[in-house]
Structure formats: C-alpha cells, structure tokens
Picture 1: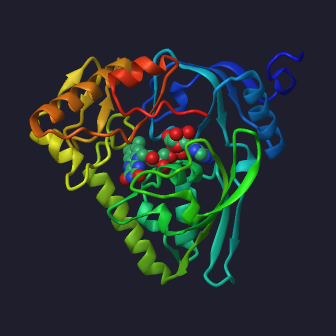
Picture 2: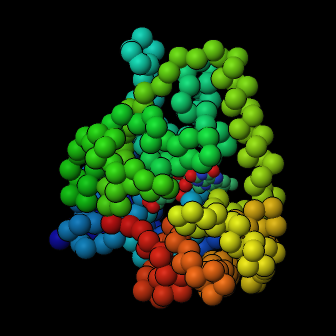
Length: 316
Ligand SMILES: Cc1cc2nc3c(=O)[nH]c(=O)nc-3n(C[C@H](O)[C@H](O)[C@H](O)COP(=O)(O)OP(=O)(O)OC[C@H]3O[C@@H](n4cnc5c(N)ncnc54)[C@H](O)[C@@H]3O)c2cc1C
C-alpha cells in the first residue's frame, strides 16, 4: 500500500513547528502539515486521513488556538493557497453579496467591504482570523457577529463530501456553531449598501475601542472563556483577584482579565496551568464553571482535558 500522503509530498511537510502559525506563538509541531492547492487535494488528504484513521485539524490564523507543547499527532491543514483565498463580489445583487473562500483573511474582507460602502462586517474590525475560523467560532462581540451576515456556507466533511448549508443549519450560537467536524471552504455573506464615509468612521471607532480595551503588547488568543449566562467572565476573574496572576511566562492580562498573555519564556503548559487555576478560583468563589472559548490542540488529549475541563480537543 502507498505510504501515507506520499503522493502529496509537494504540499505536505512532516514535523512542522506550529508556534509560528498561532497568535500565542507557543506549542510543538504538527506530525504533518498540509497546504492543499485545490479542493481535489483537500479531499485526497482528508480521504487518506480517514482510511488510515489519522486525525486531521484545520488551521486558520491560529488566533483562537493553543497548541500543546507536545504538538499535534495528526495532519494540520492550512487553507492559505490562492484557491482558498478567493473573493467574488456581487455588487448588483439585492442585497449585495460576497462569496469568499474559507481561508480568506477576515480583516482583508472587512476592509474591502468598507471601501465598497458595504455594511455588516465592520462590527468585527480588529478580530484576527480567517473567514472559516470566524464562522466556526461565530466571531464577534458587542457590535455584532459573523452569524448576522452569513447566508450559506459550503463545507467538506471527514469523507471529503461537499455540502451546502443554510445559516440556520450552521447552528450559530454565542461564540460557537455546530461545525465541529466540518471544514468551511466557502461562505456567501449578505451585506447592505451604506454611506462609505459613515461606514469608515464606524469601522475606525470599533478598531479604536478594541485597541483601548485589549492587551496587545504580548501575544494572546483573545478571550479564554465564554461569558457564563448573566455574567462577564472577565469581571468574575477580576473579582477573584486573578489579574496579573502568573504561572511561568503566562499571565492573566492586567487590561482585560479574560485574556491570558504569553510573556517571554512562556510554554503552553504554563497557559494550561493558569487556565486551570483561574477556573478553580472562580468556581470556588462564585460557584460558576467557566467554559473555554479558546481551542486547545494536544496529542495528550485526555490529560489536557482533565487539566482544563471543557477543552474541545479539536480535530476530526
Ligand atoms: C488580540 C485578539 C483579539 C480577539 N478578539 C476577538 C473578538 O473580539 N471576538 C471574537 O469572537 N474573537 C476574538 N479573538 C479570537 C479569534 O480572533 C477568533 O476566534 C477567530 O475567529 C479565529 O479565527 P482563526 O481563523 O484564527 O481560527 P483558528 O484559531 O485557526 O481556529 C479556531 C477554530 O476554528 C477552526 N477552523 C479554522 N478554520 C476553519 C475552517 N475553514 N473550517 C472549519 N473550522 C475552522 C479550527 O479548527 C479551530 O477549531 C481574538 C483573538 C486575538 C488574538
């Protein structure tokens, strides 16, 4: 039998360090790292993973991700070739639409929409990531979320089967969706014509707000925990006296207690240990179990999930 992925040598590399591919800049290597150039190659990679029972993971910009120090024992797929960064604008449609591939940079898309006087995406100004990652996470915040503009998406499942899903089928919820085992390769978004000057002003205002309220001096992956119903995770962590708490090089940010930042020398295990400590303190003081928003990829699944109960483990 043909050795695993040996026919894909030009787009698959072994032992690729993942830290440069994530915002945290932490963690070990992927056993295999694949950059498919087409849907056919993507299907072939997923098919071989299924046949060999090897776990596959899809990586966006790594802006909501912590990779464990031991790395990932599977295939990490990165959708950044031109085939997965296409954008097609339909300005005359009613409402105007854009159909974009899953690997498109979200901020590129937002800027292009703002420049063309199309509203609906500017509420996500300053949120790093790809379109696929934003849809999987239902990225957003106090100004709006991606679910508000998604009309339909095209996904590929573990068997390499392509399927179109309506926004209702995606099951968008607060910072999440039902897309755990599905890879987003394309999405159609419906936007609305707006006065370009007013749109630009709102975009800048939201960007400024983010810069003022988020710790940007050190690497992080945004909010670590989802807000529990009726509470702000950041406020609970702050009230538990955790701001500035440090384990190794990981620190609960001073500007926003729901961010953990990676200072010099930090390891993924420092971050995992600090997450576990924060959860324990908040549970003991307020009886609230914080649920992770951050995704954690680890080759020692069971143990990392024990460490920080609620970790997704990722992959499919
Ligand atoms: C400084 C900073 C500020 C942030 N602020 C916000 C904020 O205000 N609001 C907010 O919602 N988030 C915020 N985040 C988190 C992050 O930007 C979002 O979660 C973003 O959507 C992650 O996209 P990504 O492409 O980097 O996904 P990744 O981090 O690469 O992956 C996240 C998850 O999405 C999956 N995924 C990636 N691509 C695809 C795809 N094509 N198909 C299916 N699944 C996929 C991955 O497998 C993984 O499970 C912030 C992060 C940082 C670093």
